[in-house]
View 1 (tube, rainbow, N blue to C red):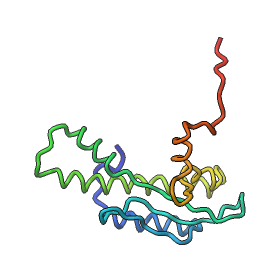
View 2 (cartoon, helix red, strand yellow):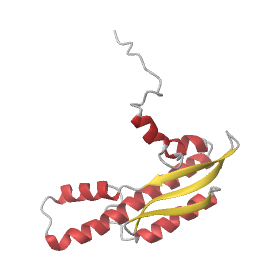
View 3 (cartoon, helix red, strand yellow):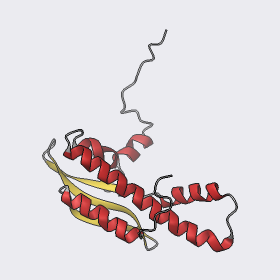
View 4 (cartoon, one colour):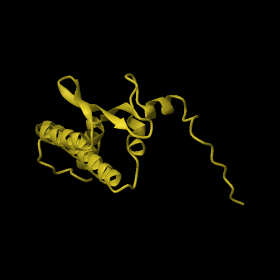
Length: 149
């Protein structure tokens, strides 16, 4: 797992993500919290294809990373549970930073358009585009015929 030993505090990584997004043209960057922890970063950015500002919500799944770390170590002592949870938080945010940096680099090199990068994370204020597709059993996706003989 990439970044599973990161010692960079999550708050520093979150600030780095915000800087990357601001350099790419994001505005109104905000952090969303649950129980005092940042759970996602939301921002608006101008989409040149639609000539509109779009709202993006990038989540982080700290619990999922925590579950992987706990499985990896199988027998975790009570004394290391907090350390593992802290590590999961650092690792999860570093993964988001890496993803953002790679995606924005691809955009800068004209390999992808901004909408391609952020499409699953376009947010209507209640759910992301991906969540809406999933709730509708992905019916909006084109059907692919199996042409194997």
